Amino acid sequence: MILIDGKKTADEIKKEIAAEVKLIISSGKRAPHLAAVLVGHDGGSETYVAFKIKDCEEVGFRSTLVRFENDVTEAELLAKVEELNNDKDLDGFIVQLPLPKHISEQKIIEAIDARKDVDGFHPENVGRLVLGMPAFLSATPFGIVELLKRYKIPTSGKNCVIVGRSNIVGRPLSILMSQKSVNATVTVAHSQTKNLDKVCAEADILIAALGSPEFIKANMVKEGAVVIDVGTTRVNAPETKSGFRLKGDVKFDEVAPKCSYITPVPGGVGPMTRVSLLLNTLKAAKKNS
Ligand code: GUN
Image 1: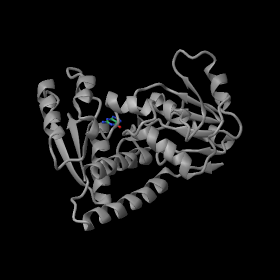
Image 2: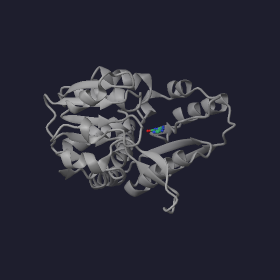
Image 3: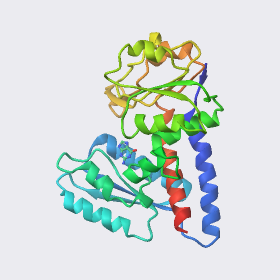
Image 4: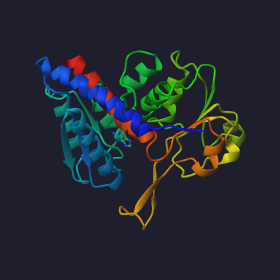
């Protein structure tokens, strides 16, 4: 069994990005610039956005954090999106989800200029992805495919089962995994899938992205399978400094011995998601220069 080290791979990619940033700056251009919009004080969102800002610093990007309180109106948020769309000193931005219930996430996503949508959530980018056209790819699917490539894990003709059909992970990942550069045969399983255990046990590559801690057990995994765990559920852990622990969707201890490759949580997919946002921002910056 080989443990896939997402942190190490992401660190390698960050070094590549930092080298490109140096070249951009030495050619007289400004550094790539990412903004993050954060509404409210959700613990998870605060942490994710703080990581995104820290990542920018590490590779030499400029970053801007835009904060709103929970009672911000949809109109105010839309006005900020419009301002960021028109900011010539900004290459890309994200609006951290989830948003408070009184704000339509879809409306906000659709208001973002697709050329600055480094999350890859805008319908134009999703449509371009489906058609195999150049697009900003949603960060987690992008990161997973890059991880498989960098570990030289064979995918062509392999049976790939994705558990979960979210707009952010499962669905775009199913499109990427079936594209000609990857060539997997893809099944998207979900809450209504019959005989889920059996479907999963047929997978050469099993990707768990349903957000249910330790859902995937050993009996659902074929001997020698590649298992990618996208889950990052916070569970209470009073013994830790933060008071919580991240749990994946895979029961790691019993599944790992059966795998040819497996990603841990934390340190697997998460760092690759973060670095994919940097790659998208670099791409946006290159287009703008
Ligand atoms: N919330 C959880 N994941 C993400 C992400 O990748 N981007 C944004 N904007 N919000 C999220």
